[in-house]
Length: 125
Image 1 (cartoon, one colour):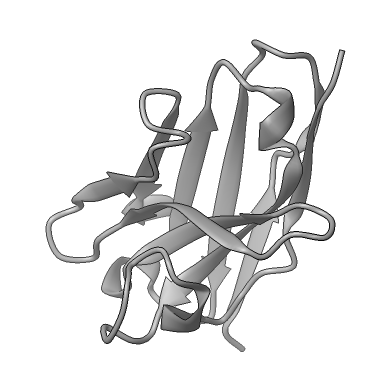
Image 2: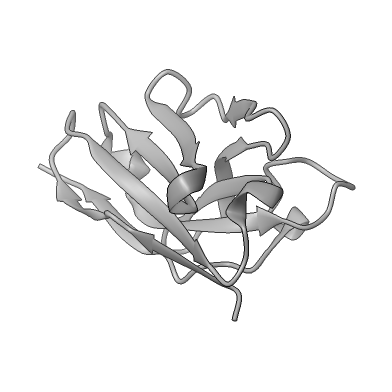
């Protein structure tokens, strides 16, 4: 059974850090480009970062560039999202997914499948 499981979310204060994990089971994560997305209440799901399957190239939306770092540990079949200097506007449900289409933007949710259930990140003072 193909499954992605996110973990590592929590309630933190502005300026704090969190490291999210996206663990895969039932398939080899290294074969896929992986994206991290977030969805705040009442807002559309947005891609924030992705990592390629071929050469490990990483990509970031401007809103998180310089603060978030995506990485993969193939031995653990896991992709991580290190989030530093968190801001209240980063509050959202964070999800990871495998890229299954290459017809559009790497940040578009329609390019991805096999979504996990997500992990909640709340940034509040």
